[in-house]
Length: 596
Image (tube, rainbow, N blue to C red):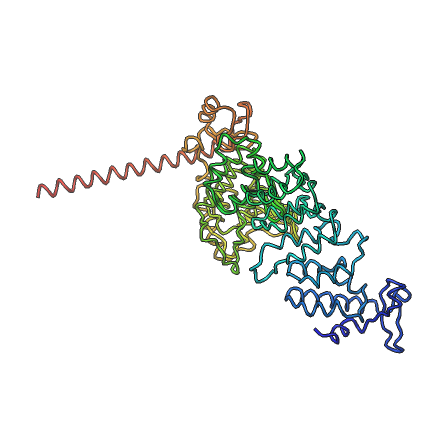
């Protein structure tokens, strides 16, 4: 874009040297007499038009930053016919993000310096993006790691130096206010990157920030040492040895040289799927439980916790079990920066059941997914399913909408949640009124799995099919005529609940059904009594603690189970009788053949 186009987009907005010196108010050229009008004196003159022109200019510079058209950006910044106030608004206004765009797309030194020279060093916004955002330095350090990326540019080292010299110790030691950065300072954000190994950057930050930079802790209590890897610790220790070795410095040198496995290193083991190293570390009895907990609980600034990664990968279940054993059941419910719990993460493969979603990871299959979901439900129970992320979406919805979720997974959900999951209706989320059931979720798929729907209808019956969502729609309202006919026919021929009336202990049809009040899991009375006496007061399915007084008889289900057992026994007796008759007939035919 040349000067003429820039001037046109601003409607020939000009500013004189004298007015710049005497007033900070934006001005506008008067088309009639060519004089300059101060907008503060005549605020109603073409204000709407000026707003649109400003939005257009902000967008133009934003596109230039994305396309790395740095000459175009430089021409705008050097254009003396455009007021400084306008330039500041384009780059630092609350509605503009062009400072960020320039940095993360690798703007060269002279452009970054021109932007900084526009700013007031005494302003609270100097070199920051506002109260709830990271500083320019935080962001620049996060984008020094992709030099070969075609989309984002690498922030040059001279720009890092410029930011550090402009902001000084206060900027270097500032803790980021962005939620996912966990109040980490500039060095901590840089070190936790796997590629953050540049000695020049680490040394520069330490020279300006001092030892205080090493002693600061983030929101979760993690220090600089906790967020470093082996090569980074060597760089820091080597720099400290060049200083006056006072007791304070010597203490830091010894601490960095003695550090073994850090939470950041543990995180990258999981991220890079080095599961043998993860397993060996978790099983090492020489490592304290506190150190293991610190590694498991770490949350990175741009990603999530190791356990969430493990769930997303459907990693080894023995490692997941070990992590939960060390930290406790609460680990399953911890949410990442998007509010997702472990079950959300296990289903978050961007493979929702729609025609335009073709991406399915090659190394993930339904069987592995089902096994991992079974582990999560076994340890987390019903409470895991209705937990929502920041968008209000339940883990149950994520699970039911995932393409990998098959009939076996759905049976696990129903066995875990029982009557709670069948009667569950979600709350409003996005612009939706909510009120959806598990059957609604199953019916949302572009090509609904008829076996899943058949199973849910057979279990929930008319009580489930008649539940209406927030818009007054039932799940079956979205079914095709063919699916409706199939479900109507199939459910008439199914013995209700026959697949679910199996005791989790003896694996036979339930007899004298008793239910644990706390978790609603059902067993044969004989089986749960024996388990209580031999194994203690933990539910054999979900490990919920209970008292034998909390085990109550379920008369309705007992009667139903007895009916199905009698039908099953009668069917087996009939099959045996038929088999006996066939054998008698074959023997008779054989004797007749021998006689002939």
